[in-house]
Image (cartoon, rainbow, N blue to C red; front, side, top):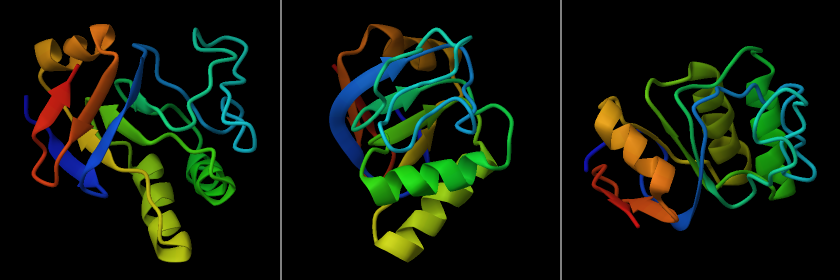
Length: 136
């Protein structure tokens, strides 16, 4: 399948975490542990660190960019994100991390519902600079 690379180019291979529920990093993700801490999110207690997080989009607070930035600094950030639509707040955090720390969190957009849903059964995924995605 093919996606549109939004931030950072290539990613993976890395384990996939799939959810249909958007997540706000502000109050929903602990940047020091890499764990989901939103008590109302189905991924509560799951580590996103080093994984490709697949969700329709981020949710809420503009502070999510700062939380993503801190997780990059702390080396607990997700390996990458797959979205159905770009979340500019997440993108800002990834781009600032690249400027400050020389590391980023790649992001790819997969708008096609069938392709997006294929990640639900995936164990791991990767993509190249051009957005050619491999799901295993």
